[in-house]
Length: 492
Ligand code: UD1
Ligand code: CA
Image 1 (spheres, protein in one colour):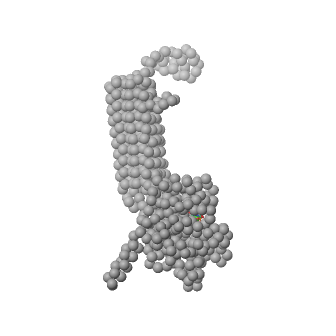
Image 2 (cartoon, helix red, strand yellow):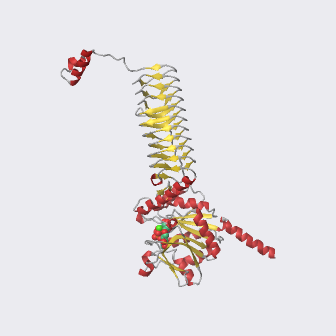
Image 3 (cartoon, protein in one colour):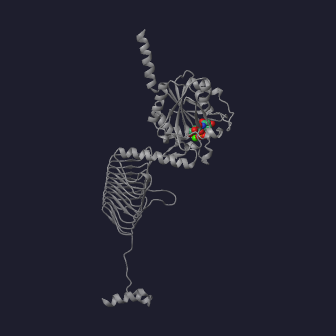
């Protein structure tokens, strides 16, 4: 019936608008020789994630029915690095036959045999292709009706990329790899971005026909377009306007360049969300970090991993935060902090070192040349100068005098220090753990506290001072000190 025909067209349209007929294959089996690295290329991180992790994060946004990652070089290391973060990805092992064509072939063979949708092929070393770009690319492929669509770009310097050779009518004729190109082909400035959409059936038909008769002795995926054309089929090309989405990482110089571009994009995203970034070129924000509107980031600052910063906080200059949580209106300057929580309106720095497990309460302070570790510092409590506070629980309204130190390590074990509310310690107090200072207790300057101090007590461990009058004039006669002393003494 007419209604049935409309309905089936509607169904196919609806299917085309969801991911049910989409499989994504991410190529990550290559060694990455040009990186000259022990670490597999696709695991080199930028913006807090391995290169291939960015590709998988983007793939996740496209809601494909299948996501496959092809692995071979250091496969266990690659799988271990990705498995937990991308539980829906299926890892497929490439065999001894090298090349991107073989990689895609083993992945297609691992799809359900009745899968007849589109296959989006992405490279694990091209992390800048975002979900919007890829959705538009897919839509273009589906609108064209061609069995294959390439993403291409026009670049000034095509070195290293496959060249897209067009026929007399301007259609795609074939791709020629750099190493197989003659002078005329090498001069072509339209490059293959290494991202493609194929109908699954097309790959099943054509990959078995791809040989290894080329300069690298590999099965090139890039042979498929030429073979399709020889059969009189059409291959569509989508020329991207922003060539940066096609940039791949083959060496360390490209790693830095692609990392810079990705960071630029992340910084800009937060700026548009209301974050003031004074100097985008020296501000590094990982992809997993979250910043609230009205945060201010000063120069030379790194906001790394899953760090979150609440509204009104000012971070930097010269600050590195790794997996930290910063509260509203806190101020954190010239600080290095990892796995630390900084409360609302607290101040940290300059020159503070916050190690894992530091929890600073609201309106608290960690000041200059202070190191903290595994330490809870209560609301409004201050550790202002030259201290080490490790394995400690500190109440509210506490003030640790300059250079107060927790001696938490007895050479064998670590011990805790407990400090009650409103305790004030004198300068240069050494708290020898395990030890407890009750609420409101005080210590004298230079106290070495080895026993618990009851609430409200004053602990003193330094012997009363004794002055031996005239000692310098008698024992150091003729020195500048003796002369100065006798001048002052005779003037009195
Ligand atoms: C490839 C393309 C080239 C394109 C460029 C775009 C081929 C033959 N050439 O070249 O036309 O311009 O990408 O960036 O496809 N990989 C495997 N298994 C292998 C070999 C590679 O999974 O056997 C993976 C790699 O890990 C990498 C991706 O495929 O993620 C691309 O491989 P790479 O060696 O970097 O190819 P290019 O020389 O850059
Ligand atoms: Ca590459």
